[in-house]
Image (cartoon, rainbow, N blue to C red; front, side, top):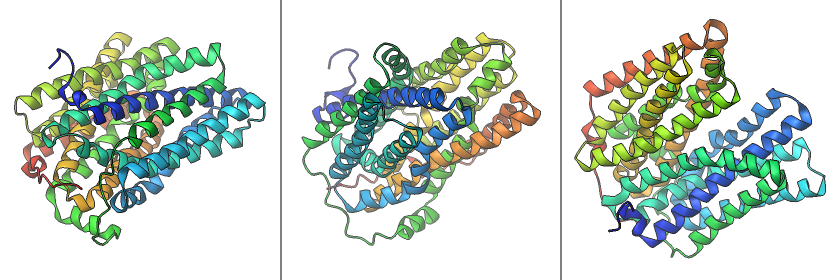
Length: 404
């Protein structure tokens, strides 16, 4: 193998999809920068700008489980192509209307909801594609690499978006986002049909019953939801954290970039430790504890440098949770329920972040950001310690189901 190139990237189909996904995630950030800027320019309202982020996430809160049902009924590749085309159309519409001077705030919101809807419905199918593209022994590496791609886009996308917005205009940000979705369409189009859709009952209650009776599934989904509830708000409340240590916009960029940088380092550490035999049912509580300790540093730090260091460590452990949980669900869930289980996973990530950000923002407004993050720290450390001393070894099982 070539030095520095992960083995999983030597699989052509996965490599094409991964590269296109990185481009698409970057394009999403370009759109977020441009749309937020335009809404601010038109309305001058921070509330409306914040509502734009909610407009993108809201469909996932409502449609994640439905997207999982669709994944179990239909070819994942076809679902992915269809939903990416919807997202490309929304971005292209914004580009055309921006160039024509006909863009309005309601149109931005409608297009954002459409793009968010395509994302919500298509993500379970796209996640389910991964184990069909790589050997089972490389699945965790593939999931980790996907997480790395997301964090690379998170680090680089906003910077590129700012440059394109400044020198070429918002329309080009939207157009590049549309092109990035089409890159994914092309990557999926050359993959043969992967699954025929299951013939078991399609009712959601089948997946609910499975989660209710399976210890591993319960621990994975509850653990993900708890983690995101108490860990997610630190990103949403980063401007408040920066203000507390006397920083400005540059410091905010450094703070968020620090978390992305830590995530890249954490992905490397996770791959190394997993290769040496560290089991997932231990890694998950360790990561929860590690993030909790790092969040505690951010909560009490009076200095920007120490706060940034805390965010680097937090980012390193952050990436472990979605990587390990996603891989465990894909390797341990029955194939006929995989789409719905991934829909539950998607919901366990998005809904708690939305709830936690509002809750801890409200707490911060009343008793201060330090106390707010301190409460979140205690909750994470408590949960991490309890799960470490009450392990569920079934999390590491691999049913090695053949998915057609």
